[in-house]
Length: 159
Picture 1 (cartoon, rainbow, N blue to C red):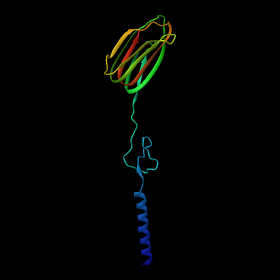
Picture 2: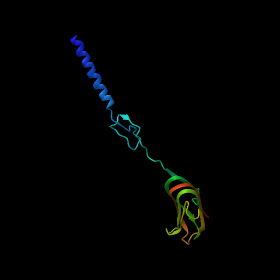
Picture 3: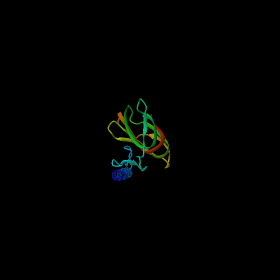
Picture 4: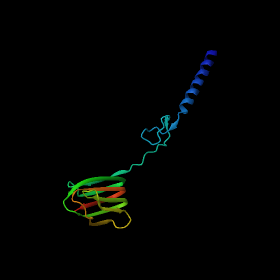
């Protein structure tokens, strides 16, 4: 009888120790892709948080680098291309249909002098603009398109 009491006592202790260790697993975020991943956590407590995904806008430029289409979902992007302008000025137009953000068009002549610098901002002022550049040096010109927190669509053209 004494052996069975010892056996029962040992069994109860083992069950108690096992349940103590399994119920004391550290809870936390166990998803390695989460911002708050906890490598010490052994049990998921549902607290995982994930990074906000902001899509980078798309800037599609034509083959001759003198026009393009824009689209974005809240991100920021910039692109610079060059083109040949045999004249000293160039006509331009730009437009946006956006709920937020801005679209900046900067054109520099062959000497690097800025001949166009115009920005359209969603919800503020005109949503399109056009004109003729300042006079510059003919040759290889550059266009820089900058989208900031841009959510919408747009386009530009240099003639």
